[in-house]
Amino acid sequence: MPEQLIVSISGMRGIVGENLTDSIAADYGRAFGTFLKSSKLKTQNSKLISVCIGRDSRSSGPMLASAVASGLCAVGIDVVDLGLVPTPTVGVMVTHLGCAGGVIITASHNPVQYNGIKLLLGNAMAPPADAAGQIKQLFVDKRFDSVDSTRCGKVASNEQADATHIEKVLAIVDREVIAAKGFRVVLDSVNGAGGGITKKLLAELGCRVSAINDEPTGRFAHTPEPIAENLTDLCAAVKSEGAEIGFAQDPDADRLAIVDEAGRYIGEEYTLAMAAKYVFSKQAGKAATNLSTSRMIDDMAEEAGCEVIRTPVGEANVAAAMLEHNCVIGGEGNGGIIDLRVGPIRDSLVGIALVLQLMAETGKSVSELVEEIGGYYMTKEKFPADSSQAQEILDRARRTFINARLDTSDGYRFDFDDGWVHIRSSNTEPVMRAIVEAKDRSIAQGYIDAVMKIRSEVLN
Ligand code: MG
Image 1 (cartoon, rainbow, N blue to C red):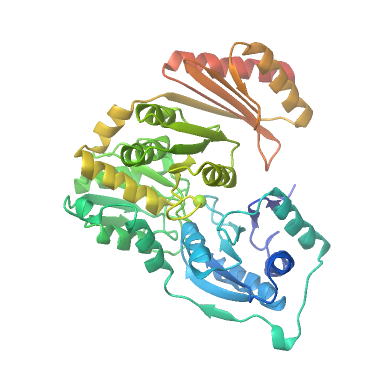
Image 2 (image 1 turned 180 degrees about the vertical axis):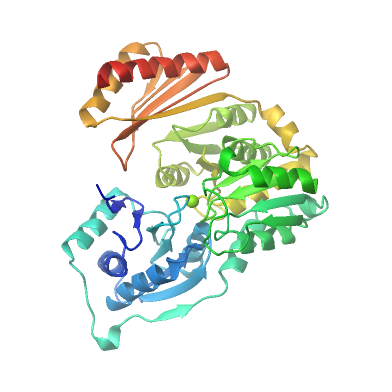
């Protein structure tokens, strides 16, 4: 069966030329523009509306960006073309330029044949569920606004995106303190959108940088997800260069993974823990993260007398909780760090700056910081389950883990003193994910075995 175009809360994703084409992208641009105009009219009349567009390095990016721009112009919206930029840079520019929305052409860590269209509202966040539903309906029904030739939108390019983003990131750290260390850094941008801007940021921070895969060709040098098995070249380069740290970004540079000074991949969960450790050392406050993220952030918060808010999985949920609770730091265990001083969006540049600041101020190496933060064993499983099977699995898990503290806001998360289990259905495919974490490997194994036993009972 051919894969379907996925239209979800955060936008659409598909295979270019199969189910994601120029005409689909133009229609999506028109739907988004129609939505923005109608919602804007309710609040303030007559103000000109503009939307900024950025793209990652995939070769289909310019074609899709032009198509979305033409759809927006056709409904009378001006477009600010940011060109090739990371996803968080678009978020920064939406706010900076006072745009009504933003569009990012990216399929994040998916293989190169995919691309996607992510939408942001004027607050630099993905549309909430009701707004996303309205945009999707306008797209499906092809109910588009149109304007006459005198009111068509225009496209103008803006070259200030990198500089604006870097300035905002530099404002949250002490550049002199970091620069005084002259850190030796290896950066792997997987030939995505992160290479150019991140090298500029690292230069501002006085780092001596060796970059690999830093050409934005869209020919990904390895499987793009920044996980251990894909980062063997980075690990080797950190060793051979004698670097103090290695950074890996995904193609749209919203996620960050770290390699220590011995060339060991430390795991994406540590990115948020390290960022939180630094931020909490400066400022007491709340953190927000999703239910599938490691307890390391709870440990960092406890040490600082701070609180962690847990949300359903999804960047927009974490960002919304951060705004609601005025959080000083937040993000996801997949290496996505959010600092509201820069923007309500996952940002690898923010992660890099905060981690370097932590190293500079403590004088500790990555491995020493990892040791200090401590670790957990995390195990993940994914299996097919339709909605009734999924509910049956959740019900049985609830009867099995009867002594746990239960959170039902996104599947079920069971918390024990010695670990936790999170079981939830995917938002985009008919599968369930089970994630467990414990201090002790055998305890983690015991929890995942219990979940897989329930799965077998229900699916057989
Ligand atoms: Mg990404």
